[in-house]
Length: 432
Image 1 (cartoon, rainbow, N blue to C red):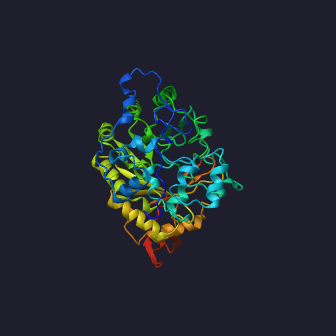
Image 2 (spheres, rainbow, N blue to C red):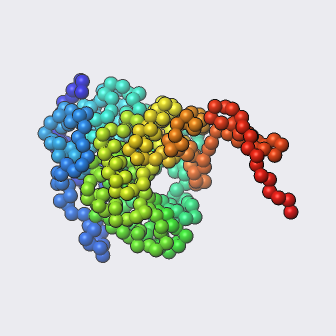
Image 3 (spheres, rainbow, N blue to C red):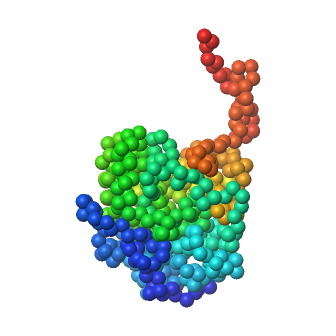
């Protein structure tokens, strides 16, 4: 790396991921359980096995430049990555040349999404280019303090559809299970910016989980449980196994999904032990949040392939972001890269109108333009659904370009990806 900075001291950033008093750490989930074997041992923090996630040349160089006292085994330990995450202005300015706007935004920060970036993800940031896609997605700017009309702390109305704390029941047969308010790396456009990283606002606990599980047990129409947060893969193995086993025991639950960004920001988390746990619970699906093709590194590819090898179907979720990925070629590159590591593009989200999000939000026409530029120009597997999660709790609404051109003489008129018109002889229902 050029313009090398002074090494980052590991002593100055040593919060304990399993129960620290430092603000913005995973809340301890240590209440007594009948399944006491699921409680996480403190020795998990000291694991140093490298496992099967490679150490790329870029990671090796970053480790040497900024963490010279750490070893490759440290770098490959997901607990080390969390404990040594960058979360202060002083730490991040050793890695990137902060603009005045970025620096001021960090100095003024008092609430909302905190700064937190794993060393691995920090190694992907461009030191001198503040417009770089990944840098813009995780480094705060002053635009976050500009609140536009119609923006809201909870634009999707999740709290109005929460029958018990930590559970959202919006659709008839599905629930959203919020496990934690912690993420290893915080996206600046997070739809749950009102709760993530703020342990006083949302703290997962075993007793809270048990209330949510009891609700699912008492609601037989629920067949699908989406585990999210925060990021559930930042939970210790034993707590994640406890949660999965508790849900799996409910007879009417047919499938479980995990929503996570861990393979993109903390691929070291995908350990052999985690894979052994996940393989126990089938059908188990995983939706992974990807933003930009720059996230498709050797480490991320290895993590996704390990998950796929474990029999877990993988889908991607991407938020459409102005100046970051609102370009057909950028999305095409991302989606082609994902397919090569066995991740099926699933959703392209219109950015939710959270407080201070106007600098991230595109027009809806831009989203339709993205689908128009993908459909027919690449494999259908690389074309996600473009959806708006309707403000006020209306759920996901898909949008498509106007391929249906109406009816004429009993035929349906259709426009293809080239703009050419075709007719389909549509059968009319027989009259009574």
